[in-house]
Image (tube, rainbow, N blue to C red; front, side):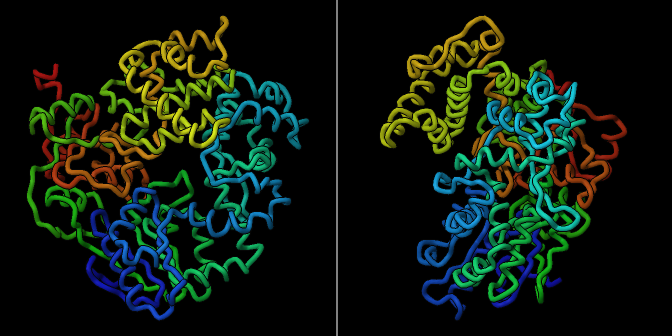
Length: 581
């Protein structure tokens, strides 16, 4: 392992792996390396390009900005899904369309696809093992209440995985099976038929892009030759988050001609639910690959770096800026109280970014409300209660559009609203979407704290064909649940607010961070190598530049004593602060 700094240059004609901790200047180094390749490579010529793959669209924009306009035309910066769709799936889909029953002429990009009742019913009715689905799990019984709820969750978490013989299979997650656990194996036998119902309508999701890309490059190796001819250099940032399909495709590209370089940090591997793993990153090797490490932390204060170094065993980061600030504070109590306490301590003008483990907590912090006593499964209940698919889509898309816009994500807000005007011209779609979104934002205070039915009534004049209500589950749901509680349950696509999940904050940095946790296990017995939960909180802590705060609901006296002895941390019980009680 060769130690370098974030300003060092390395040879350009070798496969490489760079391991760099949080704040090490990975992006700074990568941009400099790309510029060095552009300047010195004799293989780029006039039409060939460098590929730079990163994990999010925000990271793509950051790298493009840092590269500058002078060399941007020599580099293709993209997410892996967008790159593979553009260069593998879209141009060559016709080669496998018949085999997988894909209506490739209707395919227009890739998107998140949610299970729909009509599709699920059609799939179950014609399942190749439908005769094996017997009471109490007949195909009709699987469409009822608790079983259908479990089936939805199971179908929402399908993954492509390699079996013991390295065949790529579509499988379900046993942990998500719930009430359908006894028949999950039967259902799994015909999951491709379920997918084909979407593919035949030209709908593919992000995982499908990886699946079809792998099928195409292995069945038709000439595609790899085309990619190598176009792209003699292939660099991947945040490689610890890469899943096995992506890794295999990269290895195939690297077999000839193309130089592959990967950059990442095993301690920040937090996407196991997508198939990524710390061990896969550590074990990734190419012929004659050279390994480097960057040990700087250019981001955080000395006190935060000390804490990060204390919970991590494999590297010790150097204090690049060497700036002192207050020691981290561990609060015992509620997140909102901790947020308010920081304002007391540092003034009302302090900007605090809260980072949470789950969407619900992050969304609750956006509205500064607690989750105490709230049903956190309202979106699933909503889907079951409102059996009118058109009304359900109008209402849900409108909620998402409003909430996206409220955090400044107008791009996704507009996309969600445009879906509701699919029969109009593109210009009319945009105009109608803007008018409706502005109206809903203007009236936000009129429905935010009121029953969901009030929101429906505001939308009704814009969608006159939207169904009304009779007595029953749908009407009861709309009358009994508040808009704000349903809004808390939505999933933000690109969360750019001050209150995010740790996963959504990946790759970003903030002046002051309040990390919301349910326990201090990641401090009491840190094990970043084997415990992904510990790595997740490590990533959360490492986002902070100047001040770091952590809040947990409770802490035993012996745990307080241990933390005080092991770390330079101040502990404060919020129940002892009179102004907060």
